[in-house]
Length: 334
Ligand code: NDP
Image (cartoon, rainbow, N blue to C red; front, top):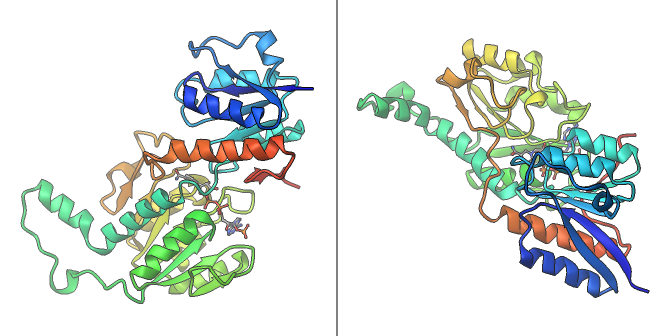
């Protein structure tokens, strides 16, 4: 007997994508139908449609105005069993709520590792090669070569510590090794042969390695263990003139302590894509600090992301239909 599966999707899901989901169902004798959110983001899905939702695909275009409508449908759906999300982080507030109700969640970790690592290494190279100074001089039409004592320090043999050697961290490590840097990885699981690092340590060793790191990059998830991990003591245990790169989550760093360490001259600079409060408040001193480069939580942006994310969801959907383990499933915190 043919079974039916209803998938809650964005109003903008392409017909090609819908077709691929229907075909995946047909292959295993399942009648798949996509339940689109109402086009008006203020409208709510009708109760009879909400009842037909078995799973939900929280795709990247949904937050642009449709977040509330999507989450309202997910919360009201009595038969929903699984939601796949475009998010790479595990810290979305809805996830814990759905997991507590026994709904499975999978995310899109790893798909944006390449653009994020490229953005992080751009921040690193901009500081290493003196671009904050060049850009400032350019705006003033001033010819100011960096010579003598102001010449950039060679990156070769400088040490980069990467906290969270997963998808993003490993890609960043690979790029840094290519620049001749010494790379230290930090994570809970032990080193594997393919890890692109010179040294690897567990999180409790972080304070011990920081004094020899000219660069600290954060690429770990925001969890109860990592919230506030980079506090004032850790920032000041970096050598004077060190730089911080955060492409993970703002709450991992004590932002007030970071601002103070940058203002005091202990830290030479920071590239920040993420902040304790987003959007970054207009009054934040970070906007105007000459030793800060910031981007609006945008380091992952890349034209291929949506295609890759749908590819992962489709693959997971086929696995889910076949009752096989799905990729990137997150588990409730124990
Ligand atoms: P991965 O899961 O591939 O990597 C995360 C790594 O962090 C794992 O190797 C994990 O290893 C490690 N880790 C977990 N807990 C700790 C800890 N307490 N101390 C040190 N390491 C730890 O995720 P991604 O690389 O794809 O993404 C990482 C984070 O980056 C995401 O969680 C998200 O918050 C953020 N992100 C930011 C984006 C942006 O736009 N700026 C976009 C995408 C992601 P182990 O479990 O062995 O410790």
